[in-house]
Image 1 (cartoon, helix red, strand yellow):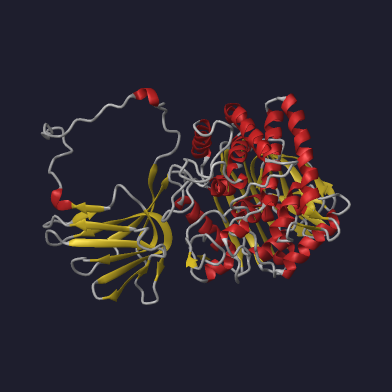
Image 2: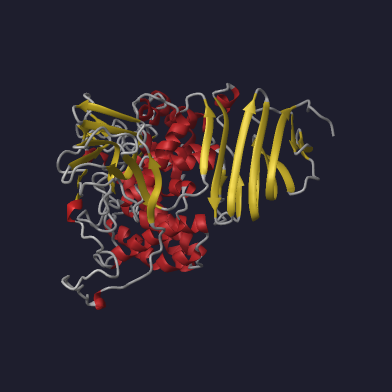
Length: 632
C-alpha cells in the first residue's frame, strides 16, 4: 500500500465537511444479490509484537525482527520533514548479509510506502492489505528508529478462547510444535481459512478440512465454520449444477471438479460441525447438497475406484514433483470416507432409505479398494509408503486375516524410516489418529520429538516459528512458504490423545465426553515426558485435563463443566497394585472401586486404565503404587 499523507484533506471525515464536489455513490440492481448478516467474528488485532532486535545491515537500512512469523501489518510512528519517503518491506526470511529475503520474488511484493506530511509525529498503518512476515526492512526513516518506531500487529478473526495445551518434556519440541500450530492457524484466518498469508491467500479446501479439528480445539470456530460451509454450499449452487466442487472456495480459477481430497471438505466439515457443536441445524441445511456431492463422486468413479487426483497426499516427503503426489488410492479413500460420512448424517437425521443405499455403495468401494490397491502376496498397499499403509488401516478395511501382518509391516516401516514423518498433509492427519486408535502413544511421541529432517523438530531446529509448506522448507528448488497450517492437524492429537479430551462417537457437542490421556509410558517412566495440561473451551464451559508423573506417583486433575458428564481415566502405567485417592479419600484399591466420593458415580478397569464415571466438578486424583501412603 502506498499512502501520501500530504494529500490528506483536513476534516473530510466530519459532518461539517463540504463534499458537494464529490461524486455520488451508485445504486446496484439488487435483484442479483442476496444479503445476509455476517456470521463470523470481525477481524481484529489479536496480538501486538515489538521487535526483539533491530539491525542495520546496510547504511540507513534497518531490519526489525519481531521474533515470530505472523500475518498482519506494521504500524509506523515517525516524525520528519514533509515529503520524506519511508519504505517498509516485509518477509519471512533474511539473506546471509542480514537484508530482507522475499522468497517469492517481485511478483509477490509485500511493500508499504508512506510519505510524511511533516511537522508532527505521524502514526500510520495500511488499511487495504496485510502481509505475512517476521521481518520488516525499513528504508528512508528520518533518524534512527527504536522498537516503538515500528510495531507488528497480528490480524485475524477474533476467535481467541481460553483453550491451550502445555507439556513438560525434555526436548521442548511438543511446546514448539504447539506454538507453530497456534501462529500458523491464527495467521490464516481471514474470514475464510486461507492457505498462506503472503502468496496465494486462497481458500484451498484441502488445507481447510485437514486443519479444521485442530482449529476447533485451539479456537472458538463455531460461527467461523458455519459461515464457511455455507460458502461451500453457495459455490456448489452457482457452479456446474451437478453437485461437484472446485479446489478453492470462494472459487478462484482452479480445477473444477476438484481433487476429492480437497472437495471432501464439504461433507467432513459439515459433519464435524455437528459432532463438535451438536448443531443439527447444519445437517438439515446441507444434507441434500452433500448427497448431490457424493452422487457426483459416484459419477466420476469406475467400479468403486475414483481415479481423479491432482494433489493426492500433498507434500509427501517423497514427492519430488507436484505430479508425484497424485494418488487414486488417496482419492478412493476420501470417496469411501465421503460415503461413510453421508451414512452417518442419514442415520442422525433418520433417512433410513439413504442409509441402506449408501451402505451398499460403501461395501462396493471397500471391496474394490482392496482388490485394486492391496498386494495380498506381499501384504502391502499401494507403493508401500507410510500413507499407503495408514489410510486402509484407519478405515479398518484391511482383510481380517491379514490385519496383524499388515500392521506389523507398517510398524516396521516406521522403524526403518527412523520414526520420521514422511507423510504429506493427508497421511499426517490420519497417522496420528491411527496411532491414537491403536494406543501407540510411545511411537507417536518418538515421531513428534524427532529433530532431523523430515520432522516438526527439524523446522524448530532451524528457527521455524510457524509450520512450513513442506518438510524441507523448499518446493521445486525454491524456498517455500514458511507459514502454512496444512501440516498442523497433529494439534488435535495433543488434546484428544495426550490429554484425552474428546467426545465419543455416539454423542455430539460435549454434553457427554471422555478424558482419557494416552501416556507414552516409556517416555513417562524414563522422565523424558513428565507432565501435560490442557483447557478445551466448549459450549458448556471449559474442560480441563492435566497429569504429572514423578518417580512412581501419578497425579491427574480434571475439570468437568456444569450440566455434563464424563468418563475420566487414569493410566496404571503397568503397575498392578495401585491406590487412587481423590481429595484424600480412597476411590480405588488394587482392582476395586471404592464408592463414597461425591460426584464419582462408578469406577471400573478397562485394559491398563482405571475409568471413573463423574459428574460436573473439579477432581484431583493421586495414584500410588501399593502400599498407599495412608490407610482408610
